[in-house]
Amino acid sequence: MLQQRVTVAQLGVLAVILSLIMWWPLHKAEWGLIDDHEIMMMIGQPEHLAWHGIPEALSKTELAPEATLPRFRPTYYFARTLEAVVWGKDASKWYSFRIAIAVFFSVALAAVLVRISPTRFAAVALLLMLGGAYWADIFARAGPAETYAVLGFACALLAMRRLMPGDGQELRISLGRACVLAFGLGCMIGSKENFAIFALFPLWLMIQRRIHVTFWAKIILTLPVIFTIWIVGITVSRLSVNMADVYMRSMTLSDRAGISIGFFSLPVVWLWGATLLSVACLLPGGKEHDLAQEERRQVKQVLLLNLIFFGLFFSQYIFYAGEWPAKAPGRYLFPGILLAQIAIFWLYAVLRPIEKKLVTVKWGKIPAWLCVITFFACFLVAPKPKVPVVANLKSSLKTVSTTNRFAQQFSRLANYLQQNPDSALIISSYSVSDYEPIHALLQFVRSKGLANPVALRLVGYASHEFPASSLKNQLATKLEAIMLHGEKSFGFTDLGSVDMHDCFSVGLHGQDDKQCREGVEL
Image (tube, rainbow, N blue to C red; front, side, top):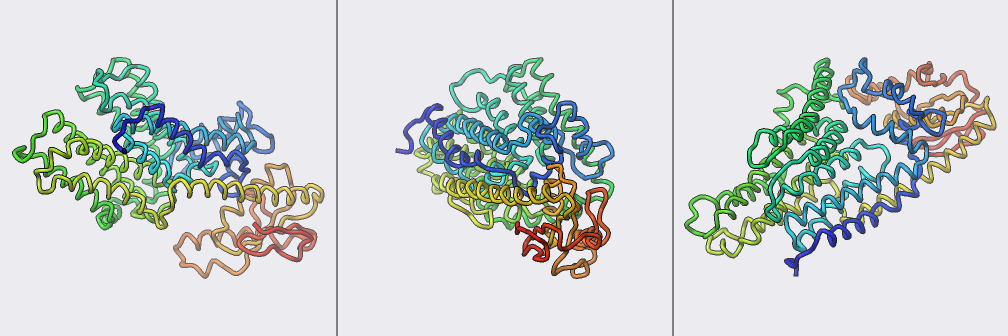
């Protein structure tokens, strides 16, 4: 049954249905406290960012020439400012756009999978790939840069689809296809630094001879390469200042080389390696089986593709300092896990039709079975594997619930402060991890045009409780300074100067201050 053929249209419809099942509830989502405050900060008090305000908005990000943050994501911030202009503060439009990206990506992936294997195996693979629980960390939020990277990845897939096995037409990169590919790579590379490695692909296209690339297509394909050189140059110059990434992890070659050893302790790596080795053992000699020359060529090509994607898998492990994939946030699993699944599925699709010719080989059926095992092992790299599709639907519903709850609580807070312009907002923090929520809440307050004093109160923790050189110590020290002295640059008032009774209190990771007239817990 699984070997019955499916069409692009059939798999495309399945892709749309799966996407809408998982993500459609998000059109009812509101703003959330974490990450979304950056959108509020960018727009300010108006409902929309003005077109002429784009340069000023970008000047306050890591794109500013004087910025020192060791990262550089021009596409991410430029796309975000465009959304701020078009969608403004309408959260439903932001989430609807992400639903549209999810659907577009799903259809693009379906088109590629049916090209690789026009059987119902492609439908099963599509279901599992789209259903991975890590997608929720990309689509079920308004903020992640990976959303734009997924859009670019989908464009790149569609641009390269005709270069995959199919109807035997001429392999050719035209001007139009080059433009789509360049746009896709620009979205990917400009949204996340670890996508810079994909700039090697247009370079390869321009020097290889099997695929015909027109003159103007080559001109267009140089653009993402130049774009990448610019991004990498700025990022490296910033990293060279203190040799640490944005998470304060060492970036020295010796430290990252030491981390690489842990890569080979991952079970999925051993499985994938065993799969590739078993396939490689089938190729030499040719005495035990009767593979046609074209079949041997396809196996070699897909084996090489797997080796390349295996290298990309390894690069993600090094980029995230050994915390990838098991200890990394879900959004960081893209594109490493997806690329691994595509490569393994492609290898299985090539081996499956020639399985009867391999029956005389002792280990002839082992490679195909290893492909299946490795494909499913990719779902086990996360700390808590979840049910495909169902987990994403639950995440969407949870986002709707939590954001609507925050919207209701913030509306109550804003109404109180608006009616009592002299009353202070007291933020009670019970954890050092509140550092971002504290600043986020202030941004939401100011974006509403509320000028009330905002003060911070730390409950149950202090900087001396954490190791002196740790990130938690640094964050707690900054929060203590805000509590005692305020912070004019962000708009905080010192706690000692506000009336602890004429106030509205917000409790983060704990109760609100009961001395105040009103309060909520977030």
